[in-house]
Image (cartoon, rainbow, N blue to C red; front, side, top):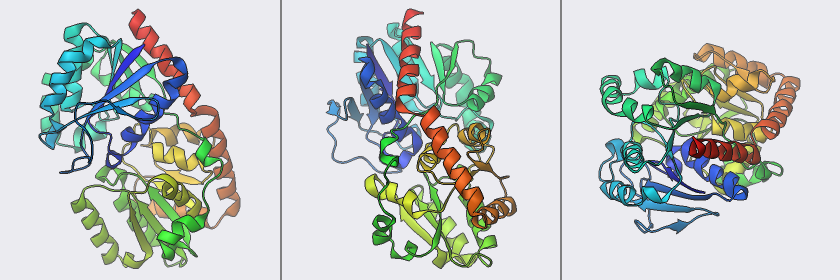
Length: 390
């Protein structure tokens, strides 16, 4: 079976989606599915991936990617991508579209519908209420009614990564196939993490402190302002703690958060590590005592899953879908989305080795039982077969 995945960006700066698609590709390898991903050369606001050869299959780890130049930042418009889709989409059995409110998603849906190729949409959480109401609300409302909703209604299926995401999207009245398939990750690297010293070699100030870790794309919805304010509250009673922030994002937002940290007296107790990959990313988990993801909205939470797989005690909110699932197994601790509540839970965890141990152990077990690559690969294969048969 030939499956085309279409996604606006595969840059690490795009956060979870850019990690999820390669994981899906690896998960599908044992199922004799030929996967090609079509995307833009986006590498963050105003940046382009380099070097890439446009319009030519670039071999990845058992799959291929096709990169096309983007002409605008807004919607990541790529006219060469549209032309390629119109010419080649009929060569595939299924099209799997990642994202909504994107030029790539719209043109992929239109091209597939025109050629009679069934397509699946994974909305990446942007259909939830927070995303619809806090990001260009009026523009989104108009665009959704005129462009996105008609495209979603023609989809053969919707792929959600959590039950929370599916239930939130139910208000749109979609009648196509609805499936929940959680993201799985390669758990092998988390069985033997690099030593803490790998991280402290790059950031020496983290070597002897009790480190709280935030690792995700830096975006308003991630609640970093809440975490920085909470960290300021616990600092007087936790003098040997340090907050490590790993991730990249809008420079203006990062500057605003750094100013906030300095104003709160936390400037010298926060390590801004930037984007971390490979061994350094894994070592960040070794260097941490706690992981915190205080998001206002997450349709899944891949970084949280990685922290769970690493056996870290994790604190999150009830708007992170994976956290809501994990709390049933006592694998994640939840806090309200406000600094005082986050601070109280952080302080309780820092003061209780027993609770940290139990949370970490439960998190590790749950990650290995429910969020593996084989489980995701089998579920995706079943979805593709169901869509083709229908």
